[in-house]
Length: 105
Image (cartoon, rainbow, N blue to C red; front, side):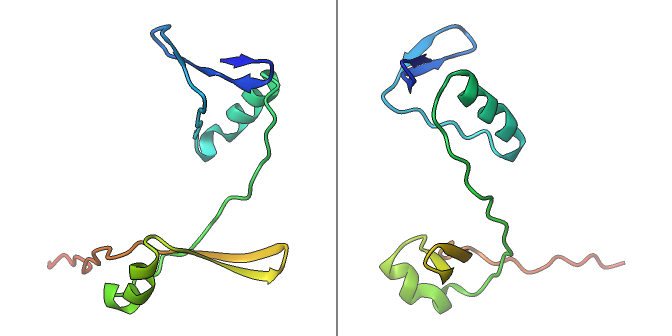
């Protein structure tokens, strides 16, 4: 629901209307075109942001514990210059590392 260019709530599939001061829409990559068109249609200002594509690296929890004890789920950002982001590193503390399963034939 939009009034005067501001989101004021959502209309559910069962036609119930839920008012809200803030609404978060997270359609994912597959819904990016849809949400962009909805924002245009409803005259809601929006900005696009880059997609983070990364590589998963696993290390034992004690390696990162000094960092994760200070800041749970820390996100480190490496900058190439003040306005150019080179890489993001997101940390999932104490994630269990599983041994690969090998089928014996």
